[in-house]
Image (cartoon, rainbow, N blue to C red; front, top):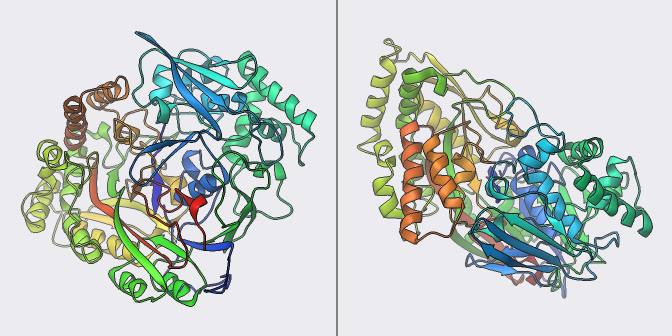
Length: 620
């Protein structure tokens, strides 16, 4: 159960362990020159577009990565690797108050329908990210919590939005786009525009087209998009916004699917999606990135439980690759498979508990943890976090997989980062890990009794709806049970059933708390913490709005800073988080990867998409 952090701002749902391996494609384990790889994913696919808050989950992002090439990617050593096959980027002006970056598409690149890729396609990223543009174009103000933006991208309010000046300039040949900022952006590569969706297809979908169009029609649609953006054609933009926000949402792809929804520039195109599998086949027009090494069909079996079902599929030769959140018993099962290679690494993904403190959507939150509740709510938030059984979760559920796992003292600098111990000693988070769980629970109950004197001894007067994802897995079911029991001892009655479609409910105010994994896709100067904690952060699902956090984030996101300054500002962010008592890290996700030993090229990376980051090298 993972949510991706949105890079410009920043879950794996799994079925129960008893689920049968319905729909697996049997493949010969030792076939010569095989060209099909079968991958197990515990998520369930919900959208071709993973760019909205509701669709920003790992499996959607994995499919988007396999079907879409961008101007760079991260490797397994956290290096940014440019993609010169598609294009290039460079700082074209660097003066105080005038920082410009030019992005250029290489000539001859095409979408899967044959339409040329141009810099006009990059311009969509500006529409998805600039609040000033949205307001000036007559679209709903993305900063207004009472409305949903026409383009519900979840990218507004972040680095690009804060510092971009005007509308980017498109070159005369339409192959370059120059973005002007009001200050130097240290992570300009990460925060700048990239390819998202083909703008000609977006225009055609908004016009009601239901089939692929001619070359001349595609060229006209691209020209119309450029005109619509520059002239701020409100009606046309709103029509495209509706398509962007919901038009790509589907759990089925078949012969009846509008082919305009499937136009991509990546190595694969979506052939079919059903409740069991996503089948991707090689894109015959692909020329946007490195060539495939042998896998021309990628089958993703979705919604398969971590544990015995995944292990059995690998052992039987019904699947080739698995990466997930297994139990210790499941890891042992995987390691017992003689034909499989198993690796366990620490990713830059982390489990956490977060408490809603204000609205982050259109609904008003007035629950027990609301900032508007003053000292009472502050005491209840602190009590809930003190009683939260983080040490038990790590000891019982994670250390059997990774004996070195610890309760997180920081989520900005995770264990393994040279600054981790220093940051954790100063950020205030130690207050939630001091003493024993019994002493912390006693302190929590004391805080609760200030407001509910009869709490304790079986009396749980504070009702908390806790959100986590369905389908579930054994580890998460055990985690929820530990939480319910531990919080009851401090006066909280926690209701925590596994919830389907949980990623689209993170803004819902009926839930006072959420636990899930944040899966990082990038490693910027702010370590993507500002995407979670900044008031305008695209992954801020708690509604927190703390001026101290925002001030530190502004400094982290503008200008290249000395390492000591970066560390100081990161500490300031987490000190404010600790003071506000609404968020705690639990554990660093142990990334367990198992794959057919005959399949070469599979190397887990710490950033998402961990499994697929180098898919083009895979081959039997």
